[in-house]
Length: 201
Image (cartoon, rainbow, N blue to C red; front, side, top):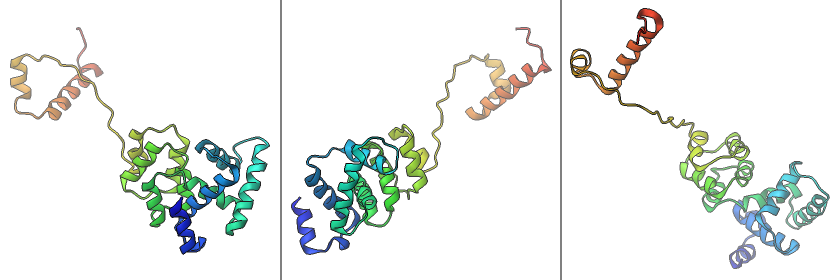
């Protein structure tokens, strides 16, 4: 809190970095509405986007608009910056450095902190579409790379051991690499079961 006050005394609000503006507004908003929780802020952002219902929204909107007037911002901008304040420090740094735009940052503020950290750790640029996809799906940390980096995790293949008589192995498979052996056996079995040999097994 002292850092926030010091920043405001030394620089004007418009000169602050986005994460600093978010911290100032969140602190001020807490004072206006007493104690705020993460869920309340998320609900307000959803109300702003029209996805929440209830008369409580009008009261919150008036508070956002009033706070916005103090700092020369719209209520919508206040809501976005309040969302930004919910980001993990790593993503706030990306926002401040210009590596993440405000709209994308707001989308990421909806996802769980562990997912946010995983996104930051990829080191990849995040588009609004990626952030929206992360927000809209029940995503786990293990899914982040697929969405952000475009990598698809290989499904684990299960295998069973099959015994091949030594004379067959020596005749057809000796000296071949494992993937070549698998390909030969697959082709042989496909040929057999496709009618080139009847399965009298």
